Image (tube, rainbow, N blue to C red; front, side):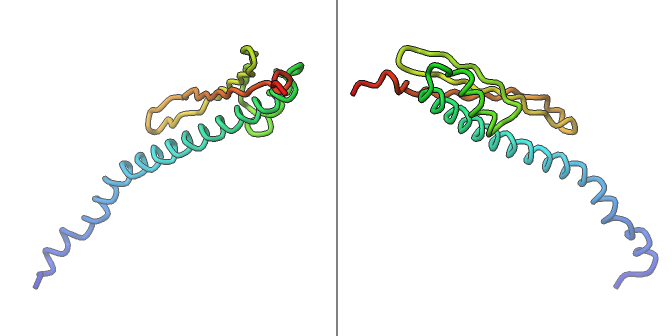
Length: 124
């Protein structure tokens, strides 16, 4: 059994321990959320590149503008580049993802590309 003098010294121990651990937990959580955001954004980039390449393959005369319009549906702030590579249309999509200042991670540039066969060149 404890005496009342011992309880007085242990009274704020849990609060101090929580105050010491909380910043580390917040930093780990922010890093986890940032990594999850990067993964979701990369999947969205790949999807946008595929959609842009598909649209440009159908309309090869206006490949760049059609690909940009298709990508803008998914990612309004992404930039695209479209080129014709023989029988294929190649669309590359890039996007800058902001960092987490609390963790010290700067902005990252993500990119994805897609190749699609031009439909006006397909042999019948």
